[in-house]
Amino acid sequence: NAGVTQTPKFQVLKTGQSMTLQCAQDMNHEYMSWYRQDPGMGLRLIHYSVGAGITDQGEVPNGYNVSRSTTEDFPLRLLSAAPSQTSVYFCASMSGNNNEQFFGPGTRLTVL
Amino acid sequence: ILNVEQSPQSLHVQEGDSTNFTCSFPSSNFYALHWYRWETAKSPEALFVMTLNGDEKKKGRISATLNTKEGYSYLYIKGSQPEDSATYLCASPNSGGYQKVTFGTGTKLQVIP
Image 1 (cartoon, each protein chain N blue to C red):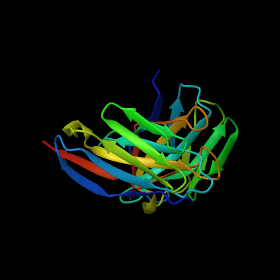
Image 2: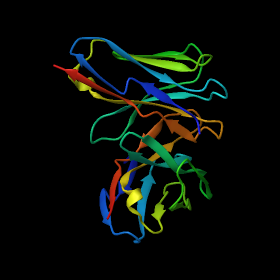
Image 3: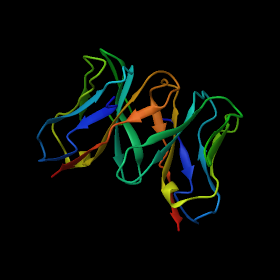
């Protein structure tokens, strides 16, 4: 099993550009989440999904969209990138309630 | 938003010393408490998931306890080794659901050889 994979690993964008961060898991996990990690802030939840076709907002959803058309994939879209979205983004999946989360390797995004 | 706090922010210990750090969380509407180990340039990896008051879990030299009534968990490392150097995160799902997890800011541990 590859576990949770994310692409790209690094990305530089200009303000106003859009892009999609890809996340996939091959463990058949129901739950998937996107977090951003900023210095001194810890991991903050952006959006999450409890299954295909179902998504909901986390703590910091503004400026991001998600979709969950399949169990495996959970892409995160930046609609119009802003410097405040410079961060490291982690995708995670979980098999059910009260189970551990498995994290992807992260995507380091810089918005100029 | 659930308030999950960790202390201390950072910690330096000598190799062989034992150490512990704290995670506090609201005791109402408790679902679970997760501990993760996060090495530099890697992804967080789960250590423990704890759900019951009085739970005590152990993995090698690392153990954790849980007090849901007073809203805290301790992580203990016995005989610290340089490879224990990492940031230790705790996290708790909030009343929004099991998958809506709030993380603390972590305790960064450095073990000096």
